[in-house]
Picture 1: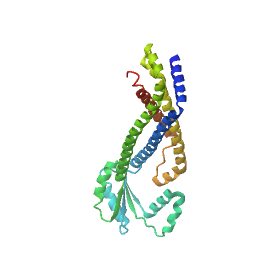
Picture 2: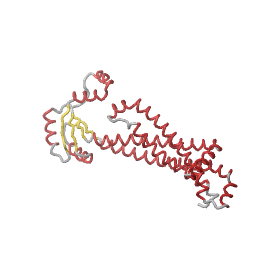
Picture 3: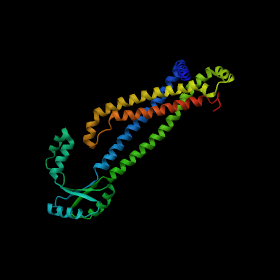
Picture 4: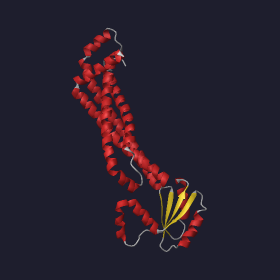
Length: 296
């Protein structure tokens, strides 16, 4: 316990003596984690939207030509019900389609009243057992006569998945670069203290102090810097994201039919991730700064 108190006391004194460089280290780590937080927030929300699309839009919509009557549509539906992977077939009139669009638009639905004649076509909705079945069913119905267009969401899911993968790779590359920068800044900060105490370190080694006893205060110094920067960046990210959720959550829900991830849920994960990274960066920076004076 006395050893821990000694390390913390020495670390705080060293941070205070080098306030300028310590502050620079905090800014460097905070900037890195804010960028990481941006990618994290975007990736999580894109992942959520992708999963919502997979779960709620496992359906095919066949838009019918105006010349296709109800009897022709019913004949199509009878054939479609026999296809593998089809769970449900439903006929939707153009009036129903317009009413659904008005509900989605909410308060802005009055804009649709200026359309005059309903431009939407009648359609057949096919619910499939999986997105994999959608491609096969689409190929089968594409040969039917009286069809204007076919819409299904497999391509949308694939595009969203590619976007998510790209964001994750970009985040990893940028994060790796910024981590290296942060470690170097922290190492240089602690190195100033090491140089100032070089003679004291030599005496401690001479009288038999172990490397880890000498390294302890510097290691704690780096960890404290990392923890402080982590909490600052997590707090800033939470405040900014909570403002975005409060301002745009309803609009996103109306347009995309999926909500933004709650800020409270993200904050817990962000704090854990940022603390782990901050402690690791601080510890690595302190260890690197001591390599010249201690055997590692």
